[in-house]
Image: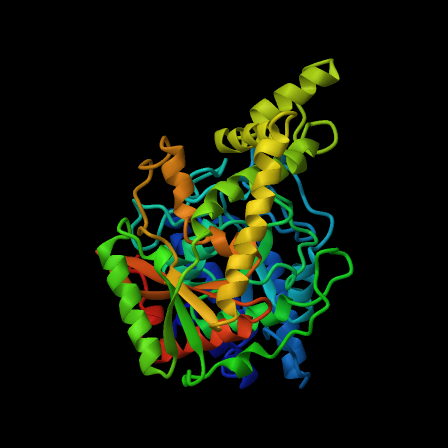
Length: 485
């Protein structure tokens, strides 16, 4: 029995019924990873010994008749910008190459409290800046559906690991689409929660008003279970919301009677690939057949999201990464005498090209003469986009769009075309700017490559997104199809 082919919720049921041991499950994923990750490059660190040790302890508890909760020993992969005590936390950057975290992020503490086993740290674009996972300082991540193509980014390691069955669940981070876009390109489910739903404490910051921890699974049920486990108020995160977390699994049902879904015309423009358009239109028909009411709507200000996002995010990045200087934090160049030289050389050697580009752009928009012209104006545009979404979400319960206007492209295709690369986030950034929950659901294939649709909901209504996504899955099998490796 190949346990790595099971979903997380299937594994939980099997462990509960004592059909399998936790140690068997963990070993299955370790063996799978050691067998194929050389092809994929999803892991930066695999914690074999500690994971197996924890699995044995949980098996002993189960044998004693103790009732576990949450994940029941199901392993989870963690993006390498989320702090796990005693493990590396490099952000896929040379400047943090030797950094070992001395503490757990809140999401990790909650995983451990709910009997999740951390299997390792997953590859990413450096400091979460990128849409292709070509920006890792250590190695690229390959798409399991075509090893010559990108998995998306910046959480490409997190989505590729789930898609290639190296892990049943994973955590990524979201700033402008870094969970949803690679989830779509790898054919898995990826959720960006409402800003404030999940604590950011222990996550190394890129852009603080946009960063969030996201969840990735093979299907909606897996994603819902993981999201519930790590959600909730955290006094150590000032942006964390004091709002009760519902039982997301209870919200999963096929019938969509009474659910209104908006279709914004601005997300179905002429430059959308026709095969992707057809997959989304087919998904809309299925949702309508399952009882949903479909309404055409308009988000005219969404087209300004990308411009506002790259101003706000780079401004915040330049501030957040100022501490990585070789003196306070980060790898230090010790061959120099002057602090100024250490600072310059440490950052020059420690940061990759894309991170340097965004730091420079962010420093520029915050400079005298540019702050009001760019940064303040971007904040005003952000407020207007929020109002645009609020208006539409008074009329519908969720909005459906493509997650990405293209499927996974080949390595090197966009590395020299910066604007083309940035436009990869065109459909995901609006929800990030507004702080709304959004999820990507696999809905088919275009020339053998996965396609996903995106659902955007009102604040703290992740339950509705899970409900709609689950309903779609009950009528299709796309989430069950496995990449052939």
